[in-house]
Image 1 (cartoon, rainbow, N blue to C red):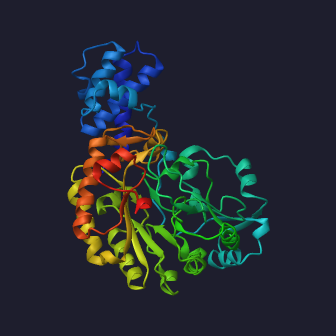
Image 2: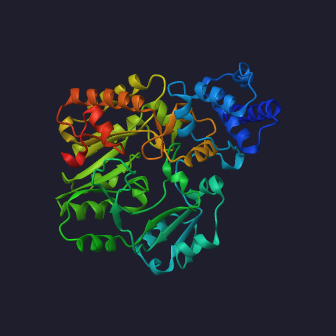
Length: 449
């Protein structure tokens, strides 16, 4: 893994050489050329001086075109110019992600006044006797008075736990990306914020979020669901928080399982990177309850999923849940493209079915790494040494930065073939891909099954 210090030096060298060579460029043009020089040097692991050694031109458009061709060798310069994203590269030590604490213990617990007498708050006071508890009128009022500062504030989110009374958005449709084929999934919003630090996580975009938020009024969620009439389809937690990472604290899984056990037309999912399954194992299971794990090869887990359980620990937890009578699910999302990806991802497939039987698997999703353009500098700020952004990523059908279509087709094709070889009846679906990609790899959405 590249060091933060090396990347800081690389950026400084990129700025120096570009400003020296192209002093006649304006600030915006200079920013784009610095970005390209830096990315090429990082991607190819060559000296900054080597990147510009063969560039003898001084016209901005010609210099940019030459660098785009080198940065995106599998696309035309015209396509790369239209679909690339070249913001300023900014490193600041205060924004770098700190090592993840192995034990979650908030320094401050802010309790919305209306839920101060709840059983959850009483439990938290027993669990965190050294924490400072403070009542607040509402989360929004606190947020207005304590505006955060980009990534530096986000890095401190584990120090602050907010216990609130949620009064809206109890559940909603999954925010599927524009132009993608949806799967009809609904999200139960039983919390916001995650204690893990995954380099690719979209929650980093919420850099003004001052802490981890959990609701103390779970019963109202159930009331809101019942008012919708007969419940059916797929629903789950895990979109805006890890479903089980704090379950030893909240114990939310117990009433959730009990509620959805009585509503068998719903396939309810807990989605996690943790091994916090003790509460699930001490209550009666149900076949419409799915415990799912996000999976990546061990190297990707070590480099990009800070604080989360290892691959083997997740698979052992999955085996225990399957033995207890739950169905299990797996999400290869995001799949990261790198040298050796195919061998390592196929090894994960083999390891899955060394732990669980195909008949115990409810579904497996596939989705390649993608991100909103504005997330690129956030990831760089928090993880300057990351390698995920080194690949060719251009704006795709939904305006997100994505791998080139041929790369995505190859990755999906390899994984689908391997999974179907294990069992043709496995429910495998693509996450946030358009109809063309579904057709190209012969994969229907799960809502079509």
